[in-house]
Length: 320
Image (cartoon, rainbow, N blue to C red; front, top):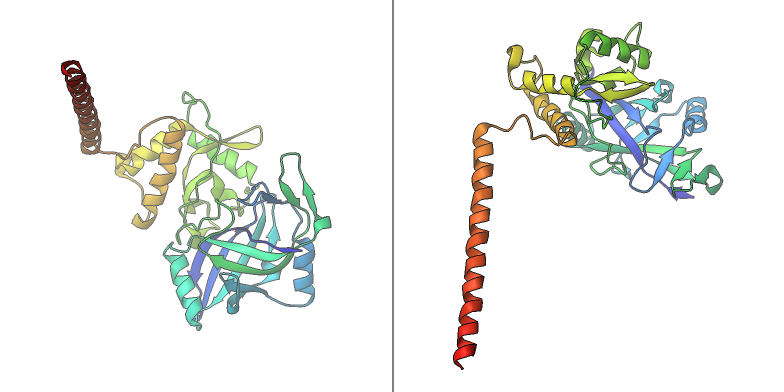
C-alpha cells in the first residue's frame, strides 16, 4: 500500500469568534482531476473512511506538510459532504500553536497555495485505464495537510475574500451574445442553487465574498453559460470583466488584494483567444515594440558583421 497526496483547494480561511481557532473550508479531491502522478480519485472513494471517523467520533488530523509531529488542528468528519464535483470539508486550526499561527497566516495572505490528503491505497482499490491513469475507488484517509506543493496543479488557495481559482472552461464563439440574467439562471440550475448558493455555485463567477457565501449577492463577475450540462466561458463576458477591471462603468467593488488574481484569470482566457492582455498599457506596448525593433536591429548588425568577416577571410585566402 502506498501513501498518497491528493488535490485540495482552500475556499475560505477566517478566524472564528474564538481567537484561538482558525477555520478553513474547501472542496477536496475533485473527482474529474488527474494529478501530476497520473491518479484520479473516483466518487465515493472516501465514504468508508468518513464513516469510520464518524463512528469513532474522531477528528481527521490536520498536519503541516505531512509531518506527524506537527499537528495543527483537525477536520470534523460530520461536516464532510460529498457533492457531484468532489468532497467538501471544513477544518479548525489551533492558533495557540506556533506552527498553526504561522500556517494560518500564510493561508490568509495567499502565500500557502495548497493542501493535500494523505492516506493508504490498496492495489485492489485501483483500476488502470487504457491511458495509464490510476483510478482510485477507495482511499483510506489518514490525515489532511497544508502544504505549498500539492500533487495537483489545480490545488491553489483562493484569497481570503474569494477570488476564485482559474477554471479552464471551453470557450464559446466570440460572437455569442452575453446575457447576464441568463448566465445566472444557468449557473443556479447547474449547481442546484435555486434556494441558496451551493458549494459549487461560485464556479460560474470570478469573485465571491466568502464571509457572505450564503447570499446570492456575494457572487460577482459571472462569465459562463451552461451548454449541454457543462460550463462554457463566454468571450463577451470576459471582455466586459476586463473593461470593468480597467475602470469602465465605475469599476467594481472588490478588495484590491483580489484584483490581481482576477486579472490573471482574465489574461489566461485572453491567451486562449490569442489576444494580448487587456491590462497592458500603451506605454508597455510601445516598450515591447521598441525592444522588438532593437532586437531586429541587433540581429541585422550581427549578420552584417558576420558577412564582412567571411569576405575578409575570402580576400586573405585569394591573396595568399
